[in-house]
Amino acid sequence: MNTEQLVRTFTEYFEERGHRRITGSTLLPPPGDPVLFTTAGMHPLTPYLEGRPHPLGRRLVNVQRCLRTTDLEEVGDPTHLTVFEMLGTWSLGDYEGPASLDWGYGLLTEGFGVDPALLHATVFGGDGQVGPDTDSLELWQQHGVPVEVTGEDNWWSNGPTGPCGPDSEIFLWTGDTPPRSTPTRDDRWVEVWNHVMMRHRRLPDGSLVPLPQRNIDTGLGLERLASLLQGRTCVYDSDLFAPWRLRLPVLWPLDESSFRLVCDHLRSAVVVIGDGVRPANTGRGYVLRRLVRRVLTVLWRDDPSRGLGDLPAELIRHTLDHFRQDLPLDDVRRVLCEEERRFRRLLERGRQVLARPRFRGPLDEEDFHYLHDTHGLPRELVLSLRAG
Ligand code: SER
Image (cartoon, rainbow, N blue to C red; front, side):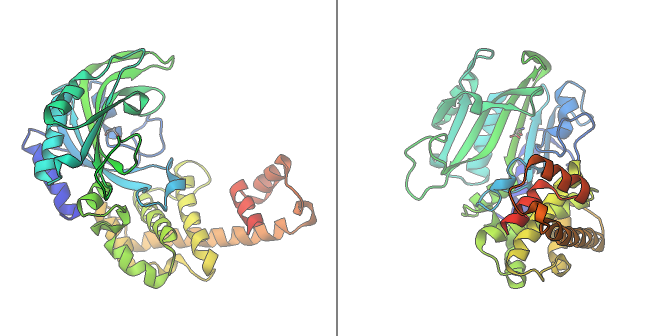
């Protein structure tokens, strides 16, 4: 199944079960949300999870692009991406957790053809404030799926305050030999689908109050699922990245982990630009700036003449099309190239400044402040220039 078929199978399965498809939002969360970017499919739905009636009813399904920078340092390994898509379903005060898990099991095994023997579930075992999730435990036991009971690993929240609740996660076995251990002990169990029983709100003092309705919020990472169903353990080997695999190595020969980083960050930069963000020194613009500069740092390590003006149009177009963005391709390229020019100038200035006798020895906090405030050189850059 390619990615497109997978999305169709997923949405149709839930539409047949009374869910209405909503259009995914941009990466910019609604006003008042505590994070810079949408990091989960539920973000744009927060007001509805908190009780406002949704115009399309109580059962929803969608595909939502998300950006997570918490994993930035892990990009380069086989599974982490900064921008990804989350397939999601919601019950806004309608059905309960066992129905959601039952459908999840049905879709994975019958719809996607996953061998039930390769599944494992985890459920919330309770804490001082909320009791154990026995409903989910019983559902999994009825299906004969092994279950691991955990504590905070099975509690989902969107931040220190706001909607939250116990969750039940579904894992798929990726090892070559039969599984002998559980998801928290063996990372060859890969999490594919999270079902959150979102029925609490955390207040600033840490206490929990019930939400006005008992919701279900589920999320399933599309790229990860696609690669697993296509028999790959690396997300960059799924059909979604095929054009990148074809074009990038010819242009810029890179080792595997650098390829993944360049591919991930460029794809994310295109999407973020497509959603209207421009490079800046703060907020969302700074995330974009970091993505582009990390790419350039990797590219220039081997060959400083490499430049983003050479990025094949097909890769920018493929990304814009996939994320249904209509910004003209040349505008994306212009933003990337302007940022590249700025970064080159900054590096030149940085090298000149750091060559001064004052900065030859160890640097103290005052030096870092001065370099930042007077010369626009962030600490990260100063450190990398001195290391290089
Ligand atoms: N909000 C949950 C998650 O992000 C399920 O969608 O995992």
